[in-house]
Amino acid sequence: MRLSFTFLFIFSLIFSCKKAKPNAFVVDNVIKANIVKTKDYAKEITHLKDYAKQHHYNQDIALMIDYSLHSGYQRFFVVDLKNNEIIKKGLVCHGGAKGKNNSGIPTVFGNVNESHCTSLGMAVVGKRDYSSWGKNYKYWLDGLEDSNTNMRKRVVVLHAWEGVDDKEIYPNILAVSWGCPTVSIQFLDDLDTILKENEKVLLYSF
Image 1 (cartoon, one colour):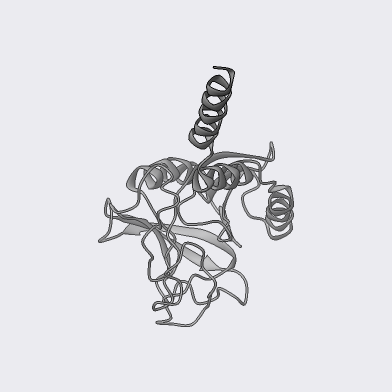
Image 2 (cartoon, helix red, strand yellow; image 1 turned 30 degrees about the vertical axis):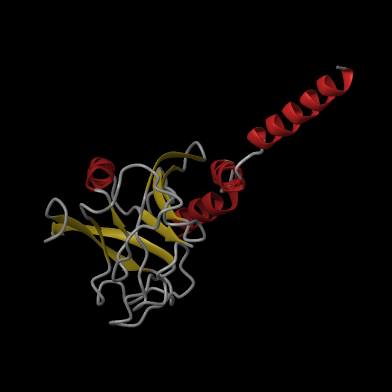
């Protein structure tokens, strides 16, 4: 009788352990999500503040995009430069580089016409204009560094597209663009409210 009881106890313990074994994929995603949420952007915000002050751009609000993050994460940030904090964020497409950037994290960047690449560096948000995408408006972008001087010539603009979600979709991959930082319609509307009240706003892509 004692032997049977011991056998049943051990069997139930093994069975319980198997059921309680964590899913490695879920745990991995939780860890990655926590890393993203706690990432420190103090260095990038300081760079934006210094650049804005030195070159006489808007010192209250700025935009930045962290292309080291997976496209399924919200990696487009609105920054309150006065309080050194991110006040809004959203999903954003990166340039497909003609098939070279089809994974979630881009590795190929460029400044050449017809390359379909995202351009890194500091830019300034320009005139609001008509667009055939999203809600029919866009913002021109003017590159301020050697790495992005051709943004206007390449028609790399800030615009919206119906295919961009409002919430994070990781581990799914966001569609790629032809180099434009493309956001959701709702997020562009949020940015539009801010940009109508602020001039010479910087966009830092890194």
